[in-house]
Length: 179
Image (cartoon, helix red, strand yellow):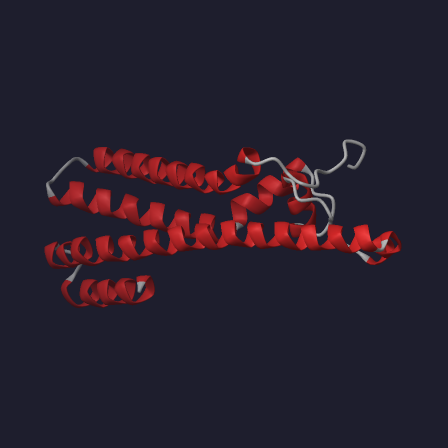
């Protein structure tokens, strides 16, 4: 939808010059695209939360196998612990450092969609302010503020997907001596 909207706006701008017609169409199309982007973002965050729960369940199954047959541990490449550290060890398929977890969190799909959504919000703000003849500098500052505010809000909302790990007591926590 975003690509089609940008192509439509580019064709209109090419045919008529980037004037009021293009700005008007942009102010109609971009909020719709923005809404779809927010919906996609929310769904992706929910999918990530479900994925963490499934990894946690798989870790518990590995723990059950090891309870039944402790000699299997040498064949397992992922964690048997159901706390946040154990889930991330499985999810990252190694011993995740704090830095690698943050890098992964920053470049995951919801954050990429959040960045596009924030850019759309900035464009809408700038176009809207320019349509009411606000000074360019004011429009740019407000657009940048809209980008930062929305991106930060979405980032912080996504971090809440890790809350279940903090709100529950794990059944099989990672021992303190395990890195």
